Length: 286
Image (cartoon, rainbow, N blue to C red; front, side):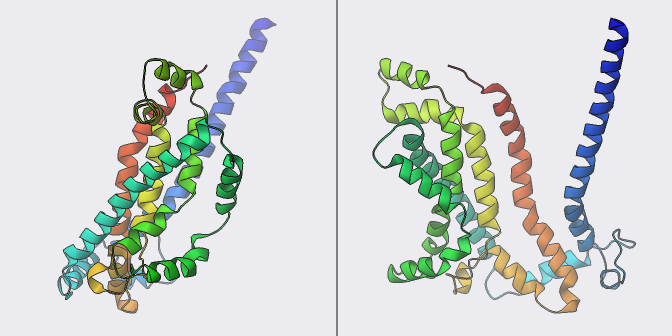
């Protein structure tokens, strides 16, 4: 009877694993489907794009959409490299500052208790409920009074006020044992050394995740609200302008969306292994 029960349990376990992995594969395929469709759409000629009902796969793939996109970008009166520089510069600066500022603000909230700490954290949680579009008018008024409209500061400062990174870093830092900090203090380490050499390495999954979210949000932002000079516009803005030419540029729009998709996807591909490995090996207990 014991063997029979064991065999049945193993059988149910195998079937359960099979069902679970099958559902995961289906969910993964469903999530990847829009990305695959966007890529296939960029290789379709115009007559296949306008077919009704639309086809998922491409019959006669072509690179003409990418050729038209690069041809249009070469005829801009502002060099295309300027738009690329603006996007890369703003995305890198905002991502780095967002990780540093969110981590430094989360450290005292996670590891120390001071008057008003609970109220500050509750305010952060409430701020997560609001969309960023709600703050456009107040941000514009503040930036206008400080003379930052049509400057890089108008693209850098507003994303730094996001509370998602602060909340994420605070929740990860709480899980770090206080005994590590106490041992470091007994060895003569100061607060800055504890923060940079103990806290930050042990919350690597959090700031890598924050880095991905921050870069993706800033890279895909057009910043049309605060930027009007053509020399300061970013890549999503000029891509949308190039694709806004009617039905004839639908393929160009598909090609531009694929190009804009590449940097965040590559960043995720290169960092996901580090996130998974760090999560698997950084578990600590008091």
